[in-house]
Length: 426
Image (cartoon, rainbow, N blue to C red; front, top):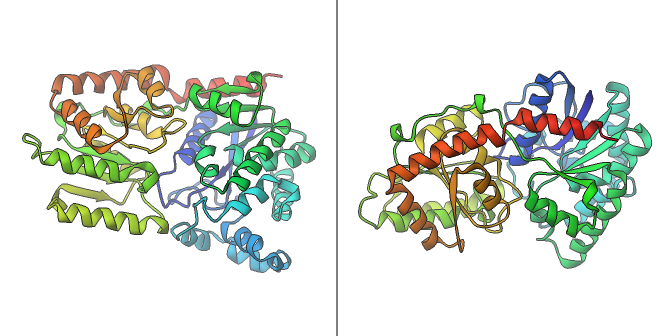
């Protein structure tokens, strides 16, 4: 089967779960004998990407932002667009403030959802022309419903099946002003008529999105995220230090401050002198002030030497991170549709401690590799971490259960076969 995955990139500036999800599916589908390419949008996917040298980044973030803000840029010469869309320029933009922020980009989100009727319609035609001349696909798979504005034109011009993943669209849309928010959900509903099937990453999020964009049950299929367990190094928990880890973009919405406050409280208790906090996942320019405040708070509490920030969060860096920690917690404030880091942690033998929000209870219950707590407050997280780190038998049991659960329920090849079945269904 010939498949195109259209994926918005993060530029490699932070741990992007959606980018990783799509790339892992692409690798699995290729290993199964299917012909699959990744087409990046906005920004490059990862800093260490090696298989996209001949594929342009469409809808380059700098160019489309300027055209949205200043319509006269729509008439700029092609050489000017080429400079703005060059990978060095886009990688530089990825680390700048506002590059991945929903606030302030509401108008552009609406324009993108309007597809051929939006300000970026010429870029849509450029993408379709490139696909037509370079790759005769059977299926085009959009990374999320914020890209659904592409679907009507792709369907019309290429005549192929169009699939669309569903994961955390609400996180982007619900911070918009009410008038933009309502229009965005309405446009996604309208675009759904050009999409053959939606693929949601959890049952929780399937139910949520069916209600939000008013689509029938039969048009949404839940296929869990997956990983290749062979990609991860399983180190017995008894051979690791009792360190706590955080792996995700380091910003307020992901609750890093909740974990830092929980760690500070934990260090005030007897019996946790050996416990350190290991943080990784990257950031953007928007996050620098927030991270600096946390560093200052850590220093004021005299814990500078017991908190480590790891800059490398790509493949080698993640393996180093998981060797250093015995438990992972990413206390996302409003929960998530899934959280790929849960699987990466458990495949490495590391239990997770998550708030009882979003799909976290569903995934942890299915895998058996962690615990949930509520409400999502530092003092409750402190108590959960203290109990788990004080109970080596429970820690080891969750480590083994999670490791086995990932192999049993979250193997990427199992889910890739489900995806192919969905593609082939009429």
